[in-house]
Image (tube, rainbow, N blue to C red; front, side, top):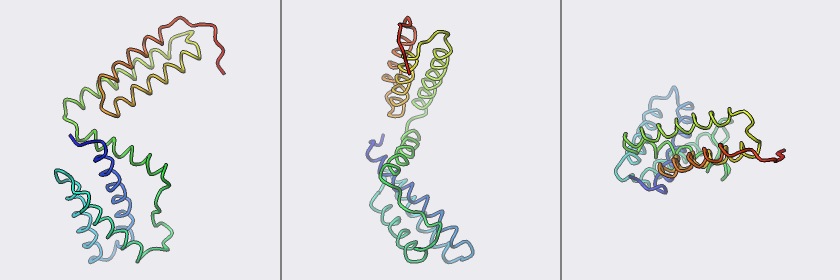
Length: 181
């Protein structure tokens, strides 16, 4: 299974490739030679990203070619994609990397993750529907549910199940006199 850093790098190149190739495809819609060139560049990058192990250097070279093409032909185009700020780029990468990581897992593991995720959702809803659940306990339940979801995102199934059990323990505590606001 690919490491998280490798998945993160693949996600970054893949996301930028998708966005930029979509923009270029729009710009060259009626030009057969340009569409062929775009198809060749995207196919080369996709092949490099799909290789085992992925060849990020080659994929990045194809991406750099697309960036250069867009910079020289459509630098002032009003719909030209701009680079996201670092925090937004990280959020986009995280989402894309989660998708790539999930796709790289064996079916058995994905099925188990789905089971745990469903269990988390059902148990969270059941806890939150309890009458008289105090505000502080409800906040703790949501926090622990977030930890369980994060563990699932990272592929730590045992940690996710442990957090679900912990969430149930916290949610079943007797409400104390507390003010939440």
